[in-house]
Structures are given as structure tokens and as C-alpha cells.
Image (tube, rainbow, N blue to C red; front, side):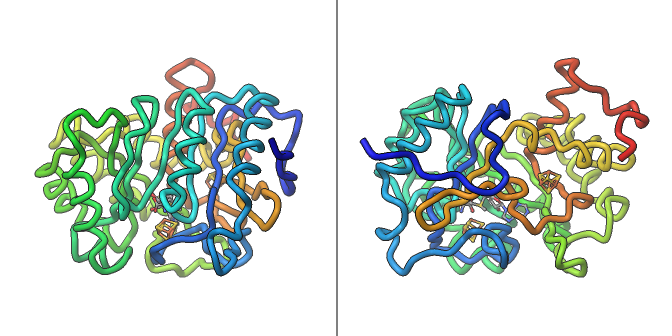
Length: 309
Ligand SMILES: C[S@@+](CC[C@H](N)C(=O)[O-])C[C@H]1O[C@@H](n2cnc3c(N)ncnc32)[C@H](O)[C@@H]1O
Ligand code: SF4
Ligand code: SF4
């Protein structure tokens, strides 16, 4: 047994965290154009060898400590690319009732049991995805999904990040994924950096983004069951709701986000790091939890006065 790692940054030991989101490695086998993790200023330094990152034992002990201290039942494993550490993942998924592993899908998926969900990231049909994520990435990810045995018990889905540059080809992506054994997918929207106001992948504001959101709503009707974002999730991305949701940001109230940094973890401003433009945030987790809170009667986004700033 080793001692848990130190937690620095915006960690609040008294906070009622529900979910932990942890970057378990800063190594990645891709270099995607839109990636928020590797933005300047975020804790994301990787030693030359992945073996020189924090040891698996310390990571496991840190998660046990945080799970027990905050009574956390769900975890999301991120990086970098978390599947670069399969032995560590096998230990981590046993610690929590539910685990989600976000992956670029380049490594064969391991069956960790039905309490684990793989979220495989693809950002367009083959040619466009590979412009964003790298040559050969689309076909490798699909091949890894297609070769899963029939009795594979972990769940799996695709998540795609919609941007100003790929919005016109989303339907092609849906069509190509529907030919595979995938049962469903979700759409997130780009979270731009605050320091990059002219990012061509991001819309100028949420009024300009609305056309893309409405297009996903129309595709949801056209392909019933395949797109899992709820109707309310998508509505909340439109003005005037979007500003109310992002100024409150439900996940920031309940997610403990851990970025790996040398011998400790750092809690950044939010799970998307330190350099984020909240006003244009389109993260799936934000609008999904906003819609869920409303469905559970915990909040109403109709009441503008409650979200005046
Ligand atoms: C940072 S990656 C880490 C896990 C894994 N390497 C992967 O690509 O899925 C987690 C998810 O964040 C998404 N993502 C990266 N940059 C983003 C951004 N600027 N805005 C919204 N989502 C982003 C990725 O596409 C991926 O689905
Ligand atoms: S694979 Fe994931 S972590 Fe790696 S660069 Fe792409 S989005 Fe970022
Ligand atoms: S960028 Fe998005 S997830 Fe992060 S704090 Fe802002 S609204 Fe919340």
C-alpha cells in the first residue's frame, strides 16, 4: 500500500463530489487538432517514458482515498489516452460502481464487465476524421469495434465533437456508423479556448452555433434511437438557455477533475482544463446534466431571473 498523491489546485476537501474524472496518463498516441488537454498552461507534461509517470499503485491508492472520502460511485478515465495503461485500467474499474473510459479506439477494447462504458471518439466520416485525428484512425477504431466478440459485456458507443468545420458532414458520419454494430452515439460540441477567440473550428457565439444544434435535432428525428442526446439537452444549447446553463455549469458543482502533474494531481478550473471559454462551451456533460437536473425537478432553466449572472 502506498500513500495517496497530493491534490493541488481547485480541490475542495469539503465539497460533495459525485464523480471523479481523472487523466491517468499525459501520453497520447494521437495529436487531435481540437484537444483541450494539451493546451498551453494545462497540467499535461509527459515524461519521455510512460513508465516514469506516477506509479499505478499511487494512482489506485489516490482513487480509493478520494472515493471513500467523498463517497464517489462513478468515475471517468481520460488522458491523454487511458488505454495506454490497460493494467491500471483493470484495477481502476474495480473501484467504482460505474466507470466510463473515453478512448480514441486505437487499441483493442478489453472486456471489463457490464459496469464499464467505452466512449470511442470519432469526429467525422473517414477522410475528415483523419484530418482531425490522424491518418488511419477511423478505420482502426471501427475495426477494433467490429472485432469485439458477440458476448463482449462492457458497453460501447461513439462520441463525436461537432465543430464549425465538421458540422456539414455529421450525417455522413451517422450513415457510416449505422453500418457497423454500434447501437448509438452522442454529440458533444467544441469547448473553445478563451485565449483563441478566432479558432476557425468554433462558432462566434451561440446564435451562430444554433444552426448546427438544430441540425442535430433534425437528425435525431431522422435516425430515432441512434442519437442519444435528449431533445431537452439540445434545446438547452440554444439561446437563451445556453448562457443560463453555462453560467451555473452543473458538472462543475459535482465533478472532481484530476489532471496528472508529476508526483501529484492538480484540479484545474474545470474538467476541460484552465483555458476555456465558458460562454461558448458545448460540452456534452454540461447540457446532459442540466437536462437531467431539470427532469428530476432540481432546477428550471425557464426562469431567467435565477441565472442573471
Ligand atoms: C480529451 S479526450 C481523452 C480521451 C481519449 N484520448 C479520446 O480522444 O477520447 C476526451 C474527449 O474530449 C474530446 N475533446 C477534445 N478536445 C475537445 C474540445 N476542445 N471540445 C470538446 N471536446 C473535446 C475528445 O474528442 C474526446 O471525445
Ligand atoms: S486522442 Fe484524445 S487525448 Fe489524444 S490528442 Fe486526441 S482528443 Fe486529445
Ligand atoms: S468550460 Fe464548460 S464545463 Fe468548463 S466550467 Fe465552463 S461551462 Fe463548465
